[in-house]
Length: 318
Ligand SMILES: Nc1ncnc2c1ncn2[C@@H]1O[C@H](COP(=O)(O)OP(=O)(O)OP(=O)(O)O)[C@@H](O)[C@H]1O
Image (cartoon, rainbow, N blue to C red):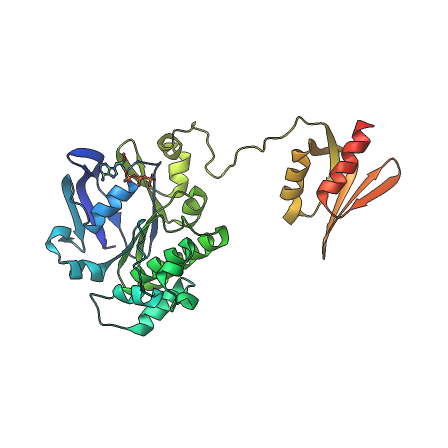
């Protein structure tokens, strides 16, 4: 497959100080690639260099096999769209006008701009002034601006940082669809490892000044991801630290529908109980959730887990 962008022995950095060196990467049509690495590892520096906003310290960036520094701004803009982390909001400009600016290298096309806004679920923002948008709304407008260019390659620096959790998932799902439908190559830097490892075909990981490419699973299984983030070899990037829970006081025989099991166990653990052998705690999930506890021949019912746990704790304390 022909790459859209590749680098040859690229080193990026500032004033002769290399941040990441010997980068040989390729980006292909139709794939979504996450750029990962801890704070300060060089993700933005690399993205800016790929965009031509700063010069390489060494090596070369090739866009469609042509040296990036030999292409005019207009030629670059036809191939590469970007939304960087600065996200300006010029005064007096509406969202649609901002997206239209993205087409400076192409014919004006209001429909393409409205479609790009629709792709980012931001069509309802088209007539709003940028100065009046929330950070998350502005972020979606900036991605739409990059999409409106109809580029072959999209470079996005932390595109989900201001989005709420469901929107993060939605935007990444949409970008994955667009990559597939339009043979678009998408490179995005992300801090959210859960999303990156779920939605990426491939990851580029920066650690200790070098860049490693691999599937999400290979980077986890090889321990390279853990090392880059300074974590122990057996670190689970999708795991979360345990709740700060009290010591275990007792067990309940938990009978609970699977979809909500995890949340009931968390609630129990928060108050010092774990599933096991003990009084039967039955959870029924219908219109609302009902919790009933069978103890000493008596059934106690509650409609909030916390209320039931109050009862359980009372009985436990005797
Ligand atoms: N203009 C600059 N001049 C000199 N050094 C810089 C400049 N901008 C960034 N750096 C340094 O370059 C290194 C890489 O920064 P960069 O912003 O690329 O990291 P990052 O991986 O994007 O970080 P983060 O995840 O925190 O956004 C850091 O050590 C940073 O302090």
